[in-house]
Amino acid sequence: MKDMYDFIMETPEAVREVIEKSKQNNEDCVRYLKGKKIGHIYLVASGTSYSAALSCIKPIEELMNIPVYAVYAMEFVDNTDIVEDNALVIGISQAGQSSSTIQALDKAKEMGCLTLACSAQKDVPVTAHADSFLKIEVEEDIGPKTKGYYCSVIAILMLFLQLSKEDSGKWISRMLKTIDLIPDIAKQTKQWYESEKDELKRFKNIIVIGYDKCIPAATEGALKILETVQCCVRYYELEEFMHGIYHGIDKSTLILALGNQSRHLDRMIRLLGYLKEHKNATTYLISQNKVTKHDFSYPFIEDSLFVSFEYLTVLQVLGELMCHDRGIDLYDTVDESFHEYMESYVYEK
Image 1 (cartoon, helix red, strand yellow):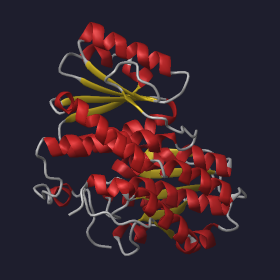
Image 2 (tube, rainbow, N blue to C red):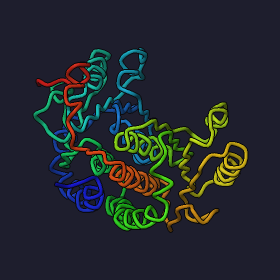
Image 3 (cartoon, rainbow, N blue to C red):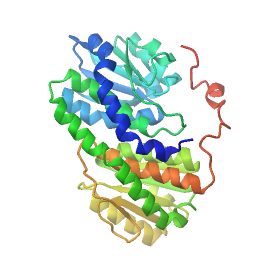
Image 4 (cartoon, one colour):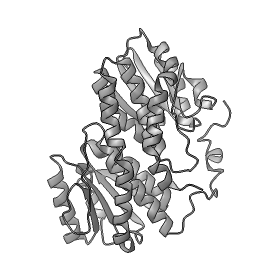
């Protein structure tokens, strides 16, 4: 039986399959959107699909030169009452059962928006609530999704690459240059974890901090650690953390800080120093260079559009390894009735 690490290592192969089959999988969407003016794009989703939506914003804006928003699906249902003319709403749900995404698509249609459903299977509930269907070419049979995140992003970007006038070869090469690093990043993370595991595995209060282009990695990384380690895990944008959150930090807190190359890096380093000195927190910087001997360093490419892929891999692997050391079985189905009880999944098309 495969574990999360296995799925992470399969990511380059899975992404290549998405790219290879994109023209075929995009036929319905291209036909639907051809000749239609698109003024704004709303990506509506929950969980890992929402994190994927965040990662899509900048690449789609660069390809299409129009505003793109990522919105929690239920937030769209409850609080989005005005949309721009010619808006396209894409509902993302890898399993295709998300009740909130279905409701968001229904509302979008009522508002006169163009609608697409993005899922790993066509014969799932969400597809009946959109005007067109975009397939995510991926199989992943474990609860905490890893390669499904990357494949969701790439599937959506391949659609807009096809709709744009950009050089597809250059874009695909750019994507794969980052994606192909994932197995090596995973191996290096695993090796680093062995030297730090006695410290890392003891915490039940974990905070992930990110900034700039790594916000999607911080969002999804925190979710992945929470799903695997099954304790209190939160993420904060760097500046937001400094507006009050630091008051709640103490020696029981583990801080995982994403230090991508940006004007904010020095500020992040200063924050970690303060938290260690004044709050007795345990901190780790994940970056190109170590500040302390315990930090994780790797020669990340840091492509401006895909940097979050690299940093997320580190957090995904940490979640898997900490989970294993804590004796947690990710295939345990003790909560299998949760979504039915809460009506957060729809089980009929």
